[in-house]
Image (tube, rainbow, N blue to C red; front, side, top):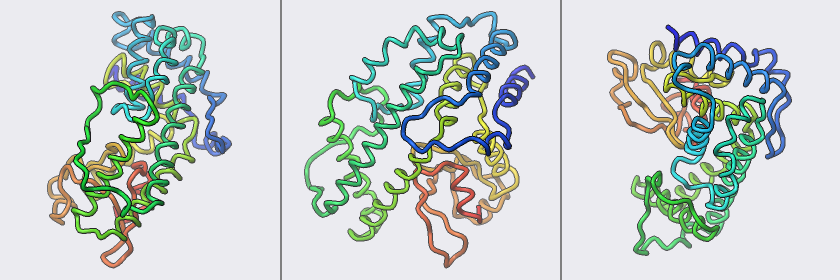
Length: 312
């Protein structure tokens, strides 16, 4: 009961739907904390200190700062595919300073790191789009190359050239996967153009609340894996997942990298009776009926995948 109480209490100090509507959308890539984030941070820190069941064994100190720092970087770039080693070296002084920043409500370290991540994401997508513009027939798919898919234990990338080599291999991997699924060159080009373009458009819609949510969860999850900060958007996604698992299509979904993944099909539900959706399936496009055009949804947030499909 303590964990449930803490989860709900932290959620309660976020923006109300009315306040969220009044918030001006960020139109630049440089995100800044919202005015209410300082008050919310103070509330979260206070509740973790005085009400969390781990309050006697965890203190907001340098050790916790290091844990939050590592978790935050992991949440942003788990596969070490965006940050450069130089970025990490620049961030390193914050490793033992985040505890002091939490105590004073200083969110500059969090947003500096997130903005760099956001910048690197945009750079990578622009690179992929530029490579596609040359035509996928220009890619040498006969070259003997290897691609490490799980880069979690790999060192941080040292240079822009090394970064480009990695992402060109990932582009080739995407091309090969589509070709192996039966898509011709023209259709593969079209689908990847749309996929990367959609992802880039989504990035321009990133809000300060998105950065703040990831950062605060790096703190709360360092206390306990079941203690989370729910932003208004995250609350909406949570409600969608609960609805899907109980009342909707009869499938539990979650976001995994750029895809929406089926975690479990509920027995006797619509998805189970349809016999087409299976656990571990990835949803890459959605439509409204048998003859309706399928829309690419790779890179979409879970709530948008559901909202955009109507039939889900």
